[in-house]
Figure 1 (cartoon, rainbow, N blue to C red):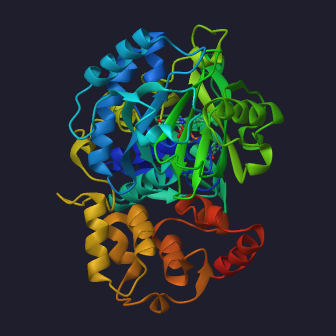
Figure 2 (cartoon, helix red, strand yellow):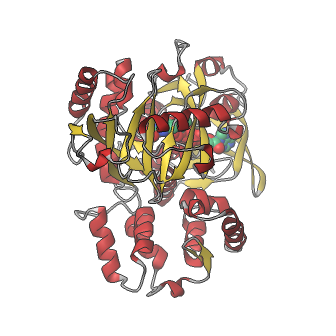
Length: 497
Ligand SMILES: Cc1cc2nc3c(=O)[nH]c(=O)nc-3n(C[C@H](O)[C@H](O)[C@H](O)COP(=O)(O)OP(=O)(O)OC[C@H]3O[C@@H](n4cnc5c(N)ncnc54)[C@H](O)[C@@H]3O)c2cc1C
């Protein structure tokens, strides 16, 4: 079989393009060397946001596009994306009140806002948002962005692609790519061994591995190699900072900002750093300086002192940024996306994706396919702006309303458990629970609230094939377990994969 389009990379950009292309009637193959979202896309700050900070770099176009997408994505996937209030305390060495006001005014008005509230000034001596903060932080601002379950955003896009007929091959590496006439011949190495597939068009969406994939082509890819800048960003997870129910934006005296975000009910997620990176992105991990930086900055803002010993989990991801101008400061390099298109007559087209954000993945996919459209005449029109992601069709009901309804229809289940499932699967929760009337109907209990039935669902419908795919990406149950509990759960889960 010859595919119309092959996509290399099962991060957000690859699955976004695969889903969009499959919905336009193309036969699509997506190849991912590890698990879906096992690259940068599950190591983000988990925000669908306009990027307030980018205004300082005059990136009005990117902020506007991102703010617009914030509304679009919230409507497409309200089960895994929800509004989050940010508190921006005015600390010593931070930006002036005038600058913050001006920035927030722009942020409120640059993109259309339908469901997401605007900003306001806040008296931190009176508002409950001030309670977790140090006493000297008396005033500030609040504004809104959205939290997203990044790994599930990827998996649900892969599910959407497969629902539209795309083939998704995980744990399969693209080893070589050769142009033969007007087709690509792609050598794959995966769980079933080595094989070769053919495609009429190709997308390189390998994130920080884009250069590595580019080097697997016969042709000259030096432009791609020169334009990419790799930057590592790390986060730490600590037990929930007492009273911190909102997200906080902490400003460092060097102009950078760090988020402290309420995470997974019991935790606070703190990040990110920005460190130039070279080497294999799979090896990226937090170093002592980054830990010290994040803890030090949090301690300048929060009353409850944090220490390294409080870190329960940390993770690092590598951004591949498009940097035509080779800026000295990595924090100022644009987070916008960029494409390189090779579409000479008589050769199969190749689209290389550079940069991008979770927030803009849908627009990236739409724009990328528009660039490929002249080479693929059978491609249908754009369709994703008004289509929900799997499980996102909550209708007029809000997510809390949906959870309440679920609790009424499944009264014997623990409401906390149903709340977790609703935030993973949305309306597809019924596909997971099936005819079960109580938790004991869901097969073996595998720890951390996981059951045999959920794991089998993840294996059959969401490509989970190793315990970590379940514990850390399809769910975050791993975070709620001790090391011993995780080991035990992994052994049990493996039996159902
Ligand atoms: C610290 C940090 C915080 C961030 N926070 C946010 C945020 O809050 N909001 C936001 O909007 N954006 C955020 N971003 C940006 C966002 O995470 C990235 O832009 C996005 O995840 C990139 O997705 P991708 O698909 O390009 O890359 P990836 O997710 O890395 O996917 C590329 C995939 O290609 C696969 N691959 C590589 N080589 C091969 C091969 N030879 N064969 C097969 N497969 C291959 C890899 O395994 C990988 O899964 C953040 C980024 C970082 C680093």
